[in-house]
Amino acid sequence: MTLELGKVASQVAAMGANAAQRTSARAKVVPTVLGVLTRYRADHQVREMVESAIRQGWGGAVPVTEPLDAAIDPIALPKRLTIVATDGSQIYPDRHGIALYYVINVGSIVLRLGSGEAPGIDATPAVCFDEEQLYGDDDYPVSGQVINARRTVVEMTRLAQLAAEEVKSAPTVALADGNIALRVKQEGIPAAERDRLETEYIRQLNTLRAAEIATGGFISRPGATSVVRLAELAEQCPPDRVAEFVKNNKGRPYEGITDTPLFDALLKPGQRSAVFKLATQWARPYEATGHAIHFFYLNIGTDLRSTVARIEVPEWVASDPERLGLLHAAIVDQCRVTDNAYPYVLMRADELAVITSAEKANFEQMVGVELLRHGIQARPSEKAATKSIARYGKKR
Image (cartoon, rainbow, N blue to C red; front, side, top):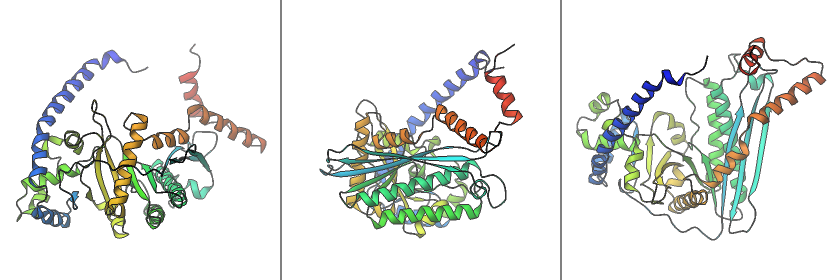
């Protein structure tokens, strides 16, 4: 059997109508929320309410120093600037395959603008196959979430190493794909593993801070509601009833809109929003070590098509106007190179890191040959072999 499109046509039609209805309803709310940001753009009482709400467990955007409705143009890039980016991919372990292992591959690029040099590119693979790598403390095989977190730590390690070396010669920007923090979910990773990975990740942020690198994480098509939640708190929470408000307002505010349409309407191409601090439980280890997570929104689109990204930065970048301006301008420049609202350096790092289906098949063949050389008959499980025949074999 396969997916019979005729049987889902009516459901798809209903989904399209529902999406159009929700989009229209949310669009009507955007001016209202933008009006809230303008009305409370520099309101000190709102800042006091936010601090009180955080003590009650509230999560959202915390105003820092800039007006809430700020729209800031990029600075001019210096004549010499180095941009470093990394990204990674993986082959997950397959207990039905010919052997148990996983692979992490990290691509990196060093782009020395103004030097006339070709970009420095590299891909660094690591094959993980011993029991310590494959099994957790509970003797169960490591999960995909664990491998993803390990890959992210390797990406950040490589980024810190390259950037710390490059900054000796020219101002340097370090750019990661996704969150600037290691987002490890409590339920997916054992506590000891989570602590070890987070400690190592923060150690790499320490390296970047010590080298004074303009460091950021680029989040494409963001879905956060942090600033919307701030607007809701400012507009709808009585100053003397913060605890009650936080307790009773757990759902998505303002018709479920995200921050993106707000800044799509507010920012012109190249402009960034105000910088906000992120208040959330998972970010506390970063705040405790001087890397409190901050963010801003950035329109990296064109006059014809607006596109908003979210840029996360550690506290020491957010508080340094020079590094913040350098990061902002570098991202705008790199997105103009590709003309598709995604930084060139991240696009190249991804190309270097990705493991294609053909490469995966060739690697598995290499593994099979090596096992056979050592007298081990390599073959997939009966389940995998049967599924392969059913999916790709000849029909009788």
